[in-house]
Amino acid sequence: MSKKSNKIKGGGLVYSTDKETMADLFAGVNISGDDAVKDAIDESNIIDQPESNISSDDRVRVWLDRKSRGGKEATIIEGITCNADDLKQLATFIKTSCGVGGSAKEGQIIIQGNRRDKVVELLKQKGFKNVKKAGG
Image (cartoon, rainbow, N blue to C red):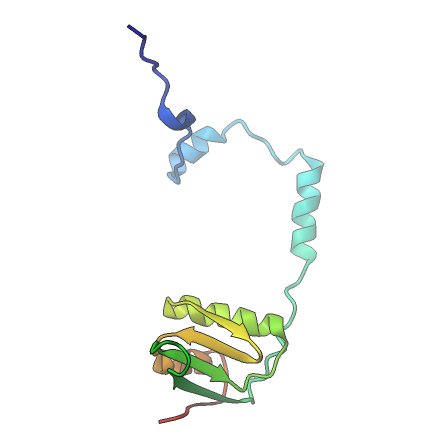
């Protein structure tokens, strides 16, 4: 007969967010003396987030599209003039707020499903002034 191992499967690594457990784990760890860590923290505080180049005066139209999508609905947002990175960042915000997938390409943001009301509301909260539903 073979002996059973007393080892825990997975190596015994346990993840916890409990304050007391984390304090006990890192009680003897001192990162304040590490110069590389201090430099990295200082540099990250210096770097500012770039300003967004999205104009809130754009004529933004939000409509529902079913063509060439196999009968599935998609919310199309068009009329936002900005660079591709800002458009992707705005698309990510809208997708996470709606809890759906989508993409940003060719000056359009495509959101899966009929989310026109929610998208118009989100864009107005973001500061866009001229946002309307289009196409019926």
